[in-house]
Length: 225
Image: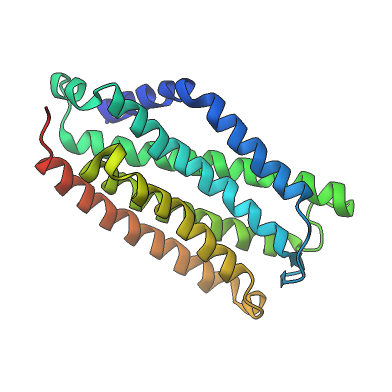
């Protein structure tokens, strides 16, 4: 467990190398949340502009997985791992902890931004969505982000940063657009919160387990040159 934590800490330090890109990207999304024209479709009283909030969580997942792993690949991380007293499964697990750290940070930023946005536009931190609507949107954002890291990590390990770039982009964009589409379904607000939450949790666990299995198999076959 100590090796996994140390590998994760090492990758978190590498965020400094891409912090400029990360800050610009996050700033752009936050600006969009506040200033992009509101749409007419609704989700629990929220305008379609709220789907930009899904991008916050998903973007953090993308930065913490693909961007960090691509940077480490250019730094020959595989050769370094070969010299360290760590097992392959420990390295793979550290990638998922890294990705989930991004999701967690994205969730915190999500709530900060949506509360600030609602306060500015409606004078209430929950706004017209209500707390249930905000939590449902957050849950969807978490699921989309987990789907993103579940696609990016095994594809990056199997194909590398350059060859796997297209898959990474699809892994970032597809879940986000899917989440936005679901958020704009007219009867989404009628979903029961409990089974909806349970379905998201089960789906997330299944995605992570399946992704980990694929990533582990890909890393075992990977040739270090």
